[in-house]
View 1 (cartoon, rainbow, N blue to C red):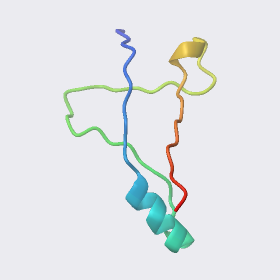
View 2 (cartoon, one colour; view 1 turned 180 degrees about the horizontal axis):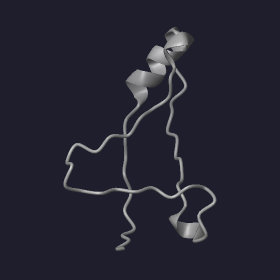
View 3 (cartoon, helix red, strand yellow; view 1 turned 90 degrees about the horizontal axis):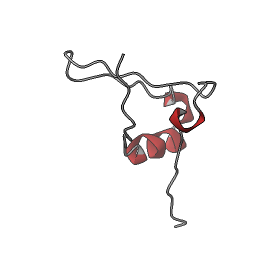
View 4 (cartoon, rainbow, N blue to C red; view 1 turned 135 degrees about the vertical axis):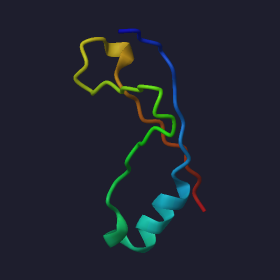
Length: 63
């Protein structure tokens, strides 16, 4: 198995705004690969290699 340290970024602003306006629509996020020829795996927060564990960075502005 080949591992590569790569970061992915998603802009979820629109989804979060919708959730704030209508909390009942918040069913979380689902990550789906668009290219079925690629296998992408994400480690959990319990992964044995600390620097390969997922990180969440939140950028926000106060209106």
